[in-house]
Image (tube, rainbow, N blue to C red; front, side, top):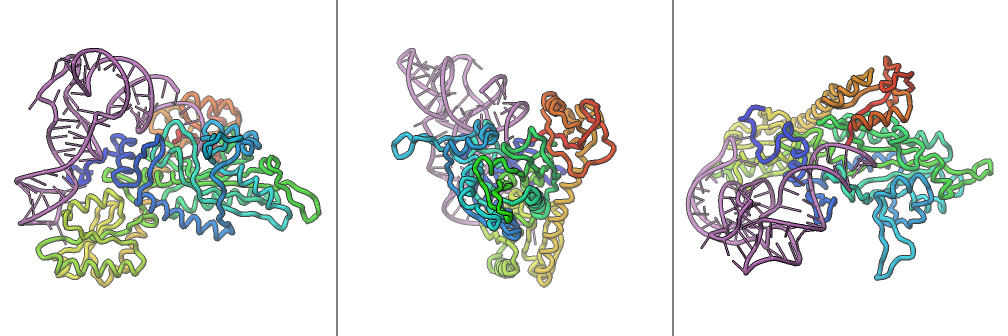
Length: 482
RNA sequence: CGGGGCGUAGCGCAGCCUGGUCAGCGCGCCUGCCUUGGGAGCAGGAGGUCGGUAGUUCAAAUCUACUCGCCCCGACCA
């Protein structure tokens, strides 16, 4: 961008310091703020509205696939958490404990849920009796607490909001099918609503969920070349069913352990949106998740309140009636230029300018947040034209993000190549992998990169493990991650 | 939790080395006038226990110790 297009000040340049830019945008656009407690953030209304706009379609999709919402307790008795050995081992280091209540020390301390498998499975053990009770398809919208060492707004905080689905099935096949179905739901949310392309695949054993048989994930590539895990779907097999004694009587009158899944996605998705689409001027929101899709800025000149404002109000009402999330910025304490910059920083996809000249011509000026390109639209066609522009922006954002992702996904046939890429522009690196934990560990030790996913559609031509040179059994994506 | 950086008005900072009109600047905020097609102008005004605690001293934003928090890079994780 040329210097004369450098309208938004007070934000660190995305290209200069990506981390500083991210924090600037999140705070200046009023998505979130730091709270007095370490690692805990306050989600402000504008940020929460974005969360609602991605939560709602996700919730609709869950319901369409037969899932129902429920709510389970915030606290989990320590003994419950300990029932599944791998599970407690994985989560124990980051659990917050309640040790007293009502002025008395508790007999058994309570974990503030880091995830709810333990408490939910204890209830499922009571509810599941017959094959007729299955499948059990529940989801919970909740907050969880994980005592992380390092925090970043939206990406990693001690407390965060999420949904966690927990299902019970009669067979291993059904559980696997469910696991993959929900992975697909996350992909749909990411790509169709957030305009962020994802790669999906299975996690290696070292990266899988504590207590799961198999973990699948959607992974996004951020502009700094680091991967972001944006949703996970776990096939729990019978691990929890055996630990919590979830059994049902089959048609054949046999007592069987049930098969389970769990899957989750979090407020981290808001952070993914910010990083993926934003630019030096601030946030850019995909129209489908933008709390304000179009902002009307009346040009306040002369007796504008008599001439311009009434027409701006009419347009506002028309667009609102058409189901567009529109805002009329009629504040007279700010100049139009100031408002332009302000709304750009907040990522509003389209600006509608209307001034005295437009009143004469019975038109408005539409300006896209993507490129500031202006188009002059007659009042009569605005109602049809605006949704078209919004749709186009949604598509353009996705295409742009996908082009970046594709450009930054490279093949490495050798260890030297892998190292070279990780030392440079990073990104996703496609490698052959022999499946050995040693090879995986070596990469992690040498360049802090991990296997993000084992690809479900292996590419050809990577017949050897890029680390040890032995025969490859998988094609994987390596990356540094958040 | 290791290495590095930083906490002074809502935000961004100067002052600290060398203790004593150092409680200051810019932006923002409030009031009024005037302006308004890319962050206008003038005038007046409000706002800070200098992150916290303890010490040294006649005197601490400044020196010492401890502590809390934030950011970056690692290790751990959504």
